[in-house]
Image (tube, rainbow, N blue to C red; front, side, top):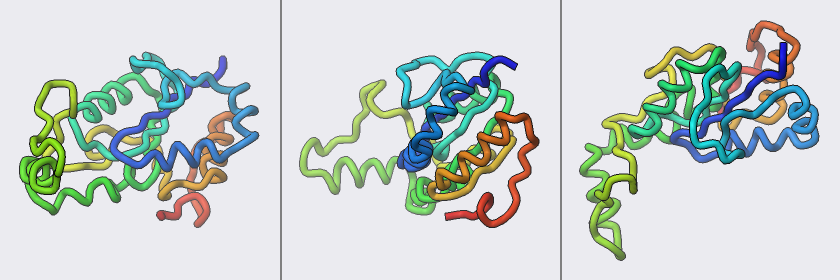
Length: 181
């Protein structure tokens, strides 16, 4: 096989999973020799490519842009990995679900609690329309592998990638690979 094509996607979340990815430190150099990063917040790539081998998806689906991107990623990716607790369960990002309607939340944040503009952003392209509910990745598209953790530690991410690089089936088992939080 040629080099594995790897995408990482940041949806509704804090970027902690991507920071944990970077915590693999010097192993990133060895990884770079084995994979081609074709889409990531680390790279200035605007369009999700076709024929991606593996995608690590961080974050939950919270707005229209997330919805479109995850659907495109699923169509174009062989192995989709829900990367971190927000992608797996909705986690912190989904805490807005029981609060109120999207319009009520926007009204509170941009009008009632604001001391600057006192108006929600409504110009097209400023803020993507929020979905009524924040959902984990598997609620929208099929997920092949779940990699829990908030964030998953660098050792866990490395263990998964190492198995993929040698062609092993991913059997995440044991406390170190399936622990949440």
